[in-house]
Image (cartoon, rainbow, N blue to C red; front, side):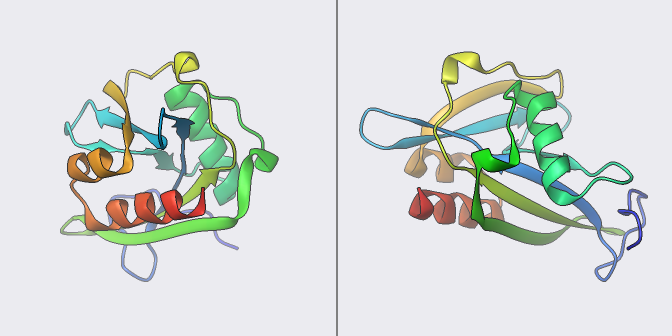
Length: 149
């Protein structure tokens, strides 16, 4: 198996790989999802990032979650049957594939520690989260996560 592509010239057949975790807490009436605002481009999304050399998808997702949110997760903390994938083109010459895993249990929102990669965090019910995220694939991931919880 070749190492994950991290260069800026990734093709649709050999995209940059990234992974993340859909984190949620129990709201008063329904689950609330963690959205993070990216410091560089100001868009809202989920915790995720590029894989490092030698990492598999699960390892990368857990590492990125710790780095971006402070939540220490283990593979057993994730639903074994949830891995939502999107393939998209963030730049004209770059393709990216992101795989999102889903936390099997709610996390404590008071334990959140966002990294400098993000300027803001919000815990939102599904309807409000869908209004805030700009990408249909990310909206689909949130809907699938809500249906699985």
